[in-house]
View 1 (cartoon, rainbow, N blue to C red):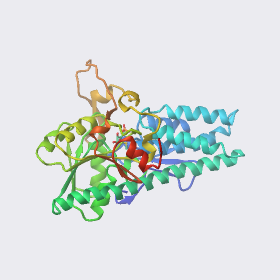
View 2: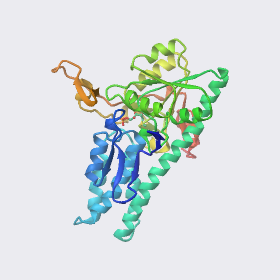
View 3: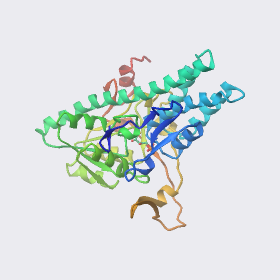
Length: 368
Ligand code: MRU
């Protein structure tokens, strides 16, 4: 997607050196556009943990490249396989909620084991990392095609008037390799000439909405308005929201959705106001092992400084300022779970279905 009028992905291999992975360091957006070179597994671990990259799909793709770098490093280790297993464990521990992380690492482990020589293993890891990234981008593109039909339908029912979409956090292209999930239908609808406007939840404490979603939409020239997190319910009561579309970090095979903290409250408000609430996600975000999202999905807790401090631009420099009394304790849950009963539908790369086990299994050709 466009950033500063150029087409980018969020992660790629350096054109001149296959051993360097490049990422957009999202900690500096929207104020600075910084590209970071990554050469080691440790740097990949830090990039995921400290959120240079974030968002379920991008975390998975980054971990995929992390395992490729692990094969390069493992050639110097005493035991190649042991080094890979340790790297896999380390990468998986970087963030607990997004299931794409372990999905990508496991996919790499399964693939690499097939190589007969070290060189073959390295080549397989490189190809698999690229495949994970490419298929993430392709899935997101397809999600956009399917999801835009819902927006088009609403637009028709409104005789072509602007469709108002509310989204939470950032599930745009910055959260994936390209296109995004929740925003992909918006991009697709916009490119077809449908009039859209996006309400962007700021999404405290790290403000991925205000910083990243607003930046993405501004870069693609899509009409949008940033709102504080508590405004959504009021807008819904006054007929100013036609549809809510959010992303997901982990979705159970029964349709419960873990997403950025605060999503559940938006789902409750949408339910109460009879507003369609959709979740857009690639199939790599489904957890096929977990039945009950509220009881079983691990919820990340992050440092209290993210709640107590706020980051912004001051006189050309990015600064953090203290928001609360210095000694007040704070707690920082990263995600919450929206139960399937509050969700109108799930938008996957293979189509749209209801958020329940029967429909999900049917869409994926699985049987009980
Ligand atoms: O903590 P983050 O920024 O990695 O959180 C992930 C998210 O961006 C959201 O929860 C998003 O809506 C779903 S992930 C595409």
